[in-house]
Image (tube, rainbow, N blue to C red; front, side, top):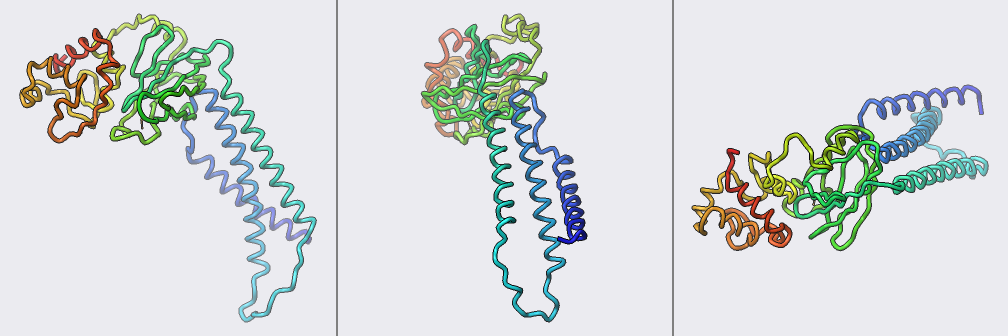
Length: 331
Ligand code: CUA
């Protein structure tokens, strides 16, 4: 090949490569990483991207060079010269991609294996999905509607569902795991960044799917100790804890809980709703609506509320929740 051709091909490759590199780096394609597993997944992403940019640049260079140098003249309608394969070239363009694809699969397999490794002493948190909320239970038996994790410790999430298939996802932790009824799926996360990040359901699971969100607080190990011992400075009312643990806010609006769900009726004016429903005293009405939601369906809504809370919420917690809701929006 002529020296000039090689120079031109190299120049076009470099320009194409530079443009692709700018596009790859200037746009924030990935969420900020908040975990070791996410770091590894991001590494695979960049490893693959670098290979893709290199291959793309070479292909573009050959394409542009060929279109420019071998184009037909304005009146040239003759056939081109006959060509028959080029064994060396074919070996090269088969061997290089084979090596690259093998490299990508090895790197991916190593990352996959490392990301499933929870170490010898992981924190175990049971994650339960229900339509349309998340529930997180710690080894001490306490449950919350949101997740709190210590920075720097391997945590094994044991994910399951009470009704339909959901999927657990924290974008900053980079992994998704299905929540399947009757099955426990593990997910290992090792937080590396203190902050609050969203927990999102990424499996269409019903009317409230889009609102099936919670959050994960990643805190320092000291703060986590305080949290797990229950010594938090601002202790929420027990009713609020039940409200959050059962994910009521996923579907209902209730000001004291900061809940803004719109799948089910707004709970800020239960007194008016109870009068309208005419089903006994306010607290009885609330209790019935939780335990036996199908008994009275508020106008404009469907029988959409899960019929599980009567068995899921222990009696003392149910009473706390009923009192909490009955006290109304100004608490
Ligand atoms: Cu649960 Cu979507």
